[in-house]
Image 1 (cartoon, rainbow, N blue to C red):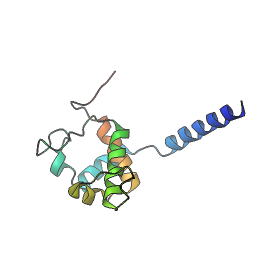
Image 2 (tube, rainbow, N blue to C red):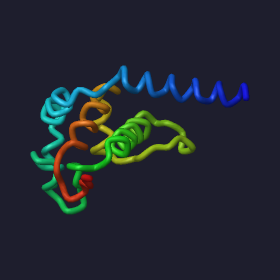
Image 3 (cartoon, helix red, strand yellow):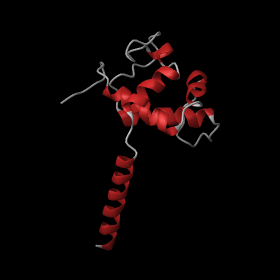
Image 4 (spheres, helix red, strand yellow):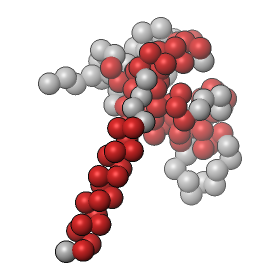
Length: 120
């Protein structure tokens, strides 16, 4: 019983922390522009300049945040056992981003309509 209470308290704490750090959509849109993400991914985030570049509009926020953090870990030289992504261009781009920038950009991209969006 005591373990269940502790687990529920932990879940509540995580939920409260996530809510307290809500993403700023306007800041996400501004960061997408400031850090020239549109150069590769398109101004609308769904018309990339090359077919090998991913469409970002409508992608899940948690996936985008995870991907940005993985590129940052890869650029920082994290050990290969860390969950990381290696890409010279993305590594250089995310090195400039703060955690808040990554959260905000991911949140803004997730609100955009795109071929990846699933709405109920």
